[in-house]
Each structure stands twice: as C-alpha cells, then as structure tokens.
Length: 252
Length: 252
Image 1 (cartoon, rainbow over the protein chains, first blue to last red):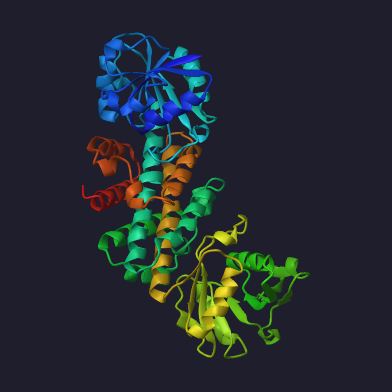
Image 2 (image 1 turned 90 degrees about the vertical axis):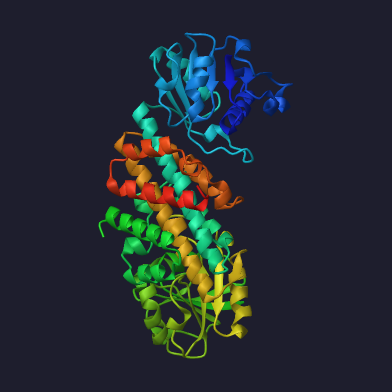
C-alpha cells in the first residue's frame, strides 16, 4: 500500500483523489488545502488539514496546486528527503525545493469539476530526479492508469505545448464555428457529430492522413467563397493562416 | 417505398448507398458512375449503369459527385420535372439545371472509405426550391438519420464554413501538435485522450464555457515559454493568432 498526502483542492487534485480512493493499492492519508472548508464534504473519508505543521509521514507528497504556487508550497513542507512531486505540465522539476527528492506526476488530460473522467485512460507522464524513485512513482501511477509513460523535461514541455494546440486552440476553433453558424441563424449543434468524428479519426490515422477539405485540394473557388462569407476580420485571419498551413504541410 | 437513383461513387455516395440499403423505406434502383468498374462489387445488389440514356424513372435522383461536376451532371440527365438533389455543403442549389425540381441533401459529416459511420447520427441538412417537394425529401432523410434539419442556403453556407473550422482546421492543429511532439521525441499518442475529451466536452458545454489554458488565464509566463519553445515560425504564428483570439473572446 502506497501512502499519499495530497496537496491542493482544484480539479486535478479532486480527480486524483477519486482515482486513488478507488484503488486498493493506494491510501490517501491526508488531504491538505489552505481553506479546509473546500474539502469539508470529504472529512469522513480522509483527514483534512490546513496547516503544514500537521503533515505526517507518507511515501509520496503530491502538490496539485496552480503553477505559480508550486515552488512556495514545496518550500513550506516541514521535512526533507521525502518524495515530492508536482502535477504540472509546464513547471520545471527544479521549481520544487531542493531539500526534497523530486519528481513530476503529470496527468495529460483536461479536468473539469463537472465531467467525470475515467482515469484508466489518462496518460500519466512521469519524471524523477533520482532514478531510484522511479519504481515507486510508477507503481503509484499504474494503480490508477493503464497509460503510464516515463518522459524527460523536454518531452513534457513539448507535450504541454502540443496540448495547448489540441485542446485550447481546437476549442477556440469550435468557438469561431459557433460564432459563424449563429450569425446566420444556423445551429452549432449540427456540427457536433463532425467534431466527434474529427477527433475519432486521428485515433487511428495520423493527422496528415486524416486531412480533407478545400485547403488540401487547393480548391480556390471554395476558399474564395468562404473568405467572402466571413464577416469578422479576426476569423478571416485564422482561416487564411490555417489554410496556408495545410497547403504547406501537403505541398500545395 | 421511395425509389432513388444514386449518381457518383465517392465516399458520400458509398456511405449513402449503404445507409439506404439498410432501410426498408428506400430502394436504390440504379447506381450510376462514369466508370462502372468502380461499382463492380455491388453489381449483384443493384443495377449499375454508366450511360445516362439508361436511367429510369425514380422518386429522387441524388447527385453525389465532386462540387465542380454537379452542374454538368445535372444538365446531362435526360429528363425534366423530376426531383434532383445534390449532396454538397458549398454548391448553390441553382447550380442544378433549372429543368429539374431541385433540392439539396447535405449530410454534415466527414466520410472516408475505411471508417464506418453510423448514419443515424449524421445531421442531414435539407433544402428544396419548391416546398411541395419537402415532405418526400424529409421522409427519405428520416429513413436513414435521426437528425434531419431543414435549412436555407445562407445557413448551409455557414455550416459548411463552420465545418472547415471544426474539421480541417482542427485536424491541422493536431498535425502541428504531432510535429511539435515528434521534434522532441515525445509520443503524439499521449495527446489522443485529450483530443477525445476536448471534442466530448463541447457536446454539452458551449466552446465558450469549455475554454481553459494559458491564453484564457492570460498566463504571460507560460505563453512566453511556449513561444520560446516553438521552433517553426509558422507554428509560432498560429500560436500567437489563436492566443489573441482566445483573449479577445474572453475579454482579457
């Protein structure tokens, strides 16, 4: 049984808590948050603390707080030479105080309070400063996910950047499509099956192979019609840049 | 029983043929293609023709050929005053020869030869020039889909443009993420669950509500790190433009 102290009460911490609780191989012995009220509903399941001086010994301490707060929280932990990991995709491992054995436990997924996630499918990307700590962190990750991967810092940075493209930027394209359809009184909902299928297609094909459409075919007439149809100059810029990008990728 | 003559042998025609064949309310009486060899494997199920002079009477003629060929094919049909529809998202209804009763039967989905599609979920967007033709075309669409919608030409143009954003452009963002991860020896596969979840999230939330990430938070430090990390200037342009777009949408 691996004992874990969880620090933070945001979406990542909450989803991790639920996943660990469902595993027989992990015990969350304490859950820390500055404001203990936030965790009030869990008080019958786990010891809730809001004071670092009450923190007990555990195998792993997981800091799942906002990027800016990671360094500070790690300094405040009143012990040394224990394994402390953060869950961020973008914060370097060395932001953790050097008094600790350090690592990263990065679940590569978007978490929201409302939506349930099956953690078994969530890739967990692991880094450790000292390779002796890897077996423990790997066992911990495998207790909740079937998709555990050891990576280095450069790979994590690239994955986090890639995640911004496939998540935040993709979502913004959905937003633009929402604005365009609404402006003509058309239902954005009609695009939802296409959104699903577009994501599904690249599960088995590469994005290169999956590409279709006017930019790929260099269909100048349709591209011209689309540009005339777009009302907002900011949407036009996005259309032009991504059309150019597709043409370049496919050598048109 | 609605009788249909199908014209064309591309992905849309093939998926439509399969969907109609599975319905008891529709009979595809003839399937036309310029090159009859393409349809050879269907010859025991349906009459294959490659000469318009052999075309027989039917309730609906569906032209599912490339956008550029629709007008020409419609002129070649050796009859008048019958219901002829095309399946394109971007071609105007008046491109069909005016000797016909005209309409549009636009399945809003991306079709590929390999991937099976459940047509019941595919939105079918309908237009007719003469409203008397609507009940027939609606019955035909409902025979294969649970998501049938009457739209006008402006709405179809907006939906087709929106489809380019959520399908082609989104797929290009996946491609950029593929290039970025590969350049650091990280596995693009690790982003696939995130791609799935991003598409899933907007099935119930608006893209506005679903947005997260550094641009939304105006997290200048992470944005700066990302821009330093991006090697290709073309990727940097996309990052900057979509970051600006998110900030603008969310008033940052």
